[in-house]
Amino acid sequence: MSYSERAKEIFAEEITELEKLGLSIDERFDEAVELIDACHGKLVVMGIGKTGIIGHKIASSLASTGTPAIFVNAVEAVHGDLGMVSGVDVVMLVSNSGSTNEILNVIAPLRNIGCRIIAMTGDVKSPLAQQADLTISIHVDKEACPLGLAPTTSTTATALMGDALTVCLMEKRHFKAENFALYHPGGALGRQLLARVKNRMQQSVPRVQVTTPFRELVGEMTEKHLGMTMVYDGERCVGIITDGDLRRSIQKYEDLHIVARDMMTPSYKRIHKDALLTDALAIMDKYNITTLAVTETPETEPIIGIISIHHIIDFL
Image 1: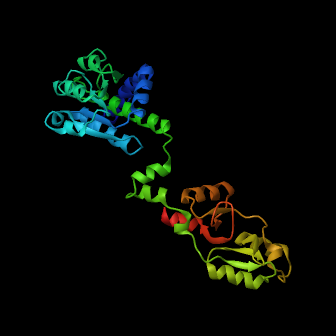
Image 2: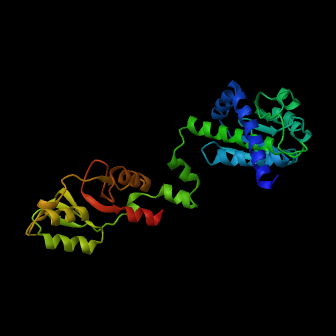
Image 3: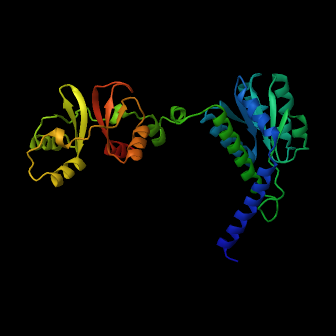
C-alpha cells in the first residue's frame, strides 16, 4: 500500500470516530455553554502535553471571538500560576485520560479559590470527571496510531470539540465581523474588516448639470477617471451617467447633439461614509455595478465622494 492510500485510511478512521463523537453530544454541552456565557470572570483552560497544546488553541480561539479566556499549564499552575485565577472564573480541565496526576492536583486548589470546573475528557468515569461540576466527553474508541499510543484521533476530537464550543459561544453572544476585527487589528483580515468607505472613497466627485452637452460630460468623466459622473439639476443630484450609458447613447442617437438629461439613469445606488468596505462590495455585487455615491449619513445627501470597486479591490 502506498503512503497516500494509507493516509486516506487514517483520514477515514478519524472521521468515523469524530462522527460517533458528534452523535454522542448531549445536554451537558448545552450546560457548559450556558455556564461559560454566564461567567463574570474568564474561562481558564488547563492541560499539559499534547492535549495542553490543543487546550491553548481552544483558549486562543475563544479569546479572539468574544469569550475572555486564557490558557494555564497545569504543572505551572501549582507553582504560582494559580495567581492568574480568581473565584469568578470557570476552569476547563482538558485531559483525555482524566487520570493525569498533574491535572488532578489542581482540583483542590481551584475549589479553594471558588472556581466552577468543567472537565473535557475521554473518560466520563475518570477521577477528573467525578470531581468536576460538569463533563464534556471527547471519548473516541481508538487512536489512528497503529500502536494505540500516540495521541492522534483523541487530540483531533479535543480540537473539534473546542471549535464547537467556540462557535456556539460566538452565536450565543451575537459576535459579528466588526467585533472580530477589533481583536485582530494588526493583520490583513482585521484591516479589511475595519476599513470604512470614507477611508477609500474619492472625494473629487464627477459632476455635470442636466443641460451639460455630450462632449463636456465626456471630458468630466475622463478627467475624474471613474467611468461615470453624477448629474445635477442645480444643487440636487438627479441621476448618474456611466460608461454603459455613453455606449447606449452613441448607438441610440444618430447625432450627438444631446445633453446629460438624455443619457442619464435617474436612479443611483448610494452608501454612507461610515459603512464597511465589505458592505459596499456586497451592494456592487448585488446590483452588478462598479461605483457607489457616498453620502454623509445613511439618510441624507449631499454626495461627498465616490467609491469604486477598484478602490476596494486594490485595498483588499
